Image (tube, rainbow, N blue to C red; front, side, top):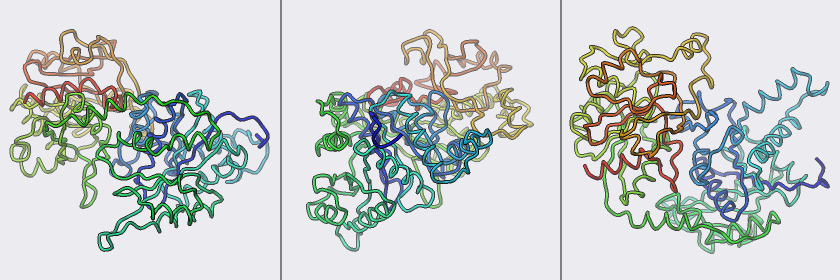
Length: 545
């Protein structure tokens, strides 16, 4: 398409400087929210520079949570932020990696779709990225595409995404803009906010042929006038387009903070879009809810993936964390989350570590490490009437605990951990066994949205308020139906199953304050403006505790 062609979709590229994890994803989500509040349809697109085709085969400690969309795409955790902020469902069209780009280019080349041309990095890689940007717009019928470029400016692997933004700016002129998100540190030894890192990252961006239209300065505190004036002069950006983004108590305050600085108006002006009145009542009500939530409860999140070296990362379970926050505010409380690694339970014992918590959550996971600590955790919650919510692996571990300690099935286990267990209460799904034998790991799990039928009168049914739901999955193993009658005779209720009745989706104990395990991931559909039902009832039970 030439520069003279009519082109109605607008494009915003979000680039980052200095360090990763500075807030590009949340900024993208907040801007998308603000534009949709003005009546514009937005398609966010996460552009990840790694050569993985998707995030499904990456360790959580390496790149954070794997977020699953309705159509089963295993994506970067930022897509989860987009969905939560925008209160919408996204798809595979909203997630892009270098692996996908190269895979598609090679497919086309093998199929002679380039008609004898020599296939080169430029222009063919940027052209494929442009095609995916336009596909994202088409899928959502979007007025604006916001493409977040993962990583930082200056990294070799994301140069082609930067080059794509340059090419699109050349072609489409006022239909394309760049917003640069960069960090201004305040070194404790100096005690002064330093703007040099932003200056350097903008120069690197300039060297790639891109000039930012707006700079969003991330810092511990608001940017002062002096810092803004320095950035405006050195980076060649108008003073009123240097936006301050200080740390806030909750990320959901960011849209309103950016709106106060008229960021949306500046974006609409740059893209030659009509200004419209915003509708941010939902967000204002949410802030009111958060501000009123004073009472505190303590919830333990016992998982396998928190530790990375000497640090603990909650990002590996970010959707769980956010879902618990959503549910807490809806119940008028503030929940203090405590990260506990299952290996700590194994070494110190559940009673020593978990005493005093009002609720316990065991999120998803894979593999054998730390599983005995998870089983001890669940036994403690069951026997001490502490509200318990098990998510995916957390349900499977609950089945093992119940099998061992209530049914007395010696060495009950999942075949994922012990292939020779005499009591495989958790077994591999038949189709998954074939895939693993062929070493087909990528995008082969039971993924995406699946229907679930709820048992009338159960805790799950009361939480959802309906008899049929859909939730997202990401697993290879399932409850072994050979043990279903034994479990039911001992008091376990299978309150949710697949429509054909074969797959156990939810198990619960009716005579417990709250003991619910789910095979799916309800955290993927919880939103700040519409919290996940199971999380709401879990927090409600934890308050009573």
